[in-house]
Figure (cartoon, one colour):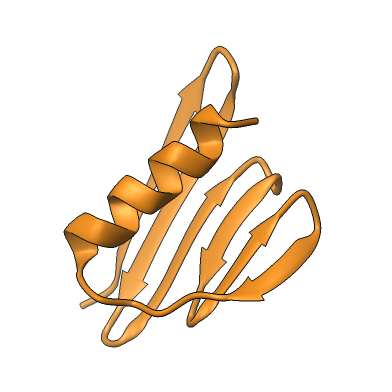
Length: 66
């Protein structure tokens, strides 16, 4: 069963989508984690998924660094 959550924050919009082994975390298009890739302000790099907790930690740190 897919999971989708959208949170509207004063600083932007956060979207989380999970379905099976596929995932997408998006912070206003500025920071996007999607299926093995990380995009920060349009610069795409590989992302090695280790755990949900680690991905959330990495994502939040990238958002804070903006």
